[in-house]
Amino acid sequence: GEDVEQSLFLSVREGDSSVINCTYTDSSSTYLYWYKQEPGAGLQLLTYIFSNMDMKQDQRLTVLLNKKDKHLSLRIADTQTGDSAIYFCAESISGGYQKVTFGTGTKLQVIP
Amino acid sequence: DSGVTQTPKHLITATGQRVTLRCSPRSGDLSVYWYQQSLDQGLQFLIQYYNGEERAKGNILERFSAQQFPDLHSELNLSSLELGDSALYFCASSVGTGKGEQYFGPGTRLTVT
Image (tube, rainbow over all chains, first blue to last red):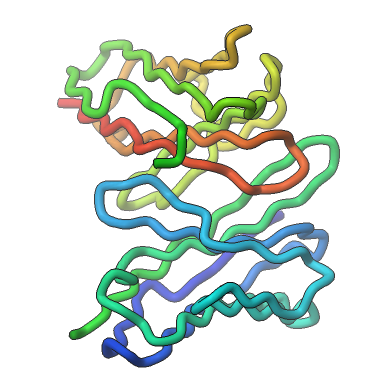
């Protein structure tokens, strides 16, 4: 079955880089995603990577995928206080329908 | 603003009652998903509809049901409510079913007293 795991908490100083990690178990994952949830709000899709890619960069965000180890990471460069939020990793498996499994979420605290 | 709307924003009701949560997807999106987010269970996928038909089921209780109407809006019905049903309920939508680019609504906060 699918299982997506993340560490619960990460604290960084403003201006540093943040790296949020995620491991998943289903090797048939097609897409992997990062979502951001700010307090009191819904989840916002940040970026996603197709499973045949190793890396994707989008401005301050870099996603790295190690398919062999089933490990996904999100690096945020020059972390700002506005980046403080919960970050969810998710995987989807296509096969007639799409089911997305979300991780437990990592709470990122940015210290000014 | 994701383009997904949910009503109501907040709902307070008593145990044993029944409530209906409503979701309007982004214009052009055919898929609607329902999720429950609680402190102890995290984000749980409940159910997905695509163009009016049920497509996938997750951890949805038998007391809960959903449907998607011809105009593509969706309703989640929660009955015989229990204290443990208190949570944030999110609706999300996507164009199709192939990828996970889901756009989330702001959620409905349900409090069962």
